[in-house]
Length: 243
Length: 230
Image (cartoon, rainbow over all chains, first blue to last red; front, side):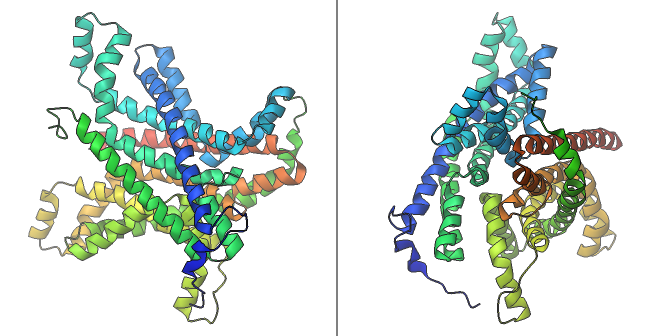
């Protein structure tokens, strides 16, 4: 290979004047974490609502949940981001559209909301499966105790379901973090984006991508370890994963 | 809000969108799924082979691929493949690899990790008696896998494999980051040339949505049919 390795490149100043190339990548890492967390909160909140809707006895509610999930699951994330970023401002009334276009940090908000909505459909499916896996007797017992639907969900079904689906939720959280890389297409300079621009400025392709890869691996390790601890702390006694 | 919609831009570019763009997307999807399945099955067999080192290597590969965002992997291979090609062929400089070949290699290597997990689950779902019976009949390891285990694992996992292929179909849109004219890339080119982002992106969304919906409906039907057989 006649590739010129230069691992010192990370300590050289970047052309943006924001410090070294390493600083550039680190700022990308922070943006990846920030966008990922914001998207994950949106995905969890909306996904929980939609997941519950899909398990309600009301046909209308479960149909709305079904339509929501199918809508967000059957389009590539990239296309969805384009819809929010390029198409939505044009379809809104003029003044709103202008306001949206001039919003500072528009790529960040678009990415957080777009990825959040995309992932919420997946969270909803996980939660539906989790609620579906509970024995029928749980809901019946709650009804027999005189709990209404809201109370049944809040005190009986959801606390159980969420703990059962914690492992798949961990994967979905990691997927959310990984999906923030798609936002490079709408100009968000997250980790992959910063690695890409470092490659363009310095021509050190493999150093840049190696560093980004290592950062993703470390981030992944931190999340998996943290989630293991949480899983252990909230494990349901009597289940295989329980104490 | 649809008053100044230009539906004609879609009609004018239909040929380009589908004959060039969609053909690229569908060919890439089909070949990647096929390649991913072959490599994925090989990786799954490595992991289940009982040979510690082989299993470790396969496991690390799968975990590694599944930790990285697809966009980063696309960039990696785009820059790496020319050098690997140079190394393999002993050429004096990095060889140039076409857009299609580069993305095909990327998706085969990336999807192999995901397909291998599906095939592993499929192989593990086969009852222990089956390979034992095959061995009792005097079949070798190769024959056991080829005639007994893999056909059943593949059949049991067919719905999941197809669902993963739908995900792959959607993911191929990410080759956009390399400015490759797949379906979305073609739509985006027309959109930027004619200044018709709204029409083109809405149309692209509609096409992806329709294809994925129909395909996942088909998978659900198939799943119901397979469920009866067992």
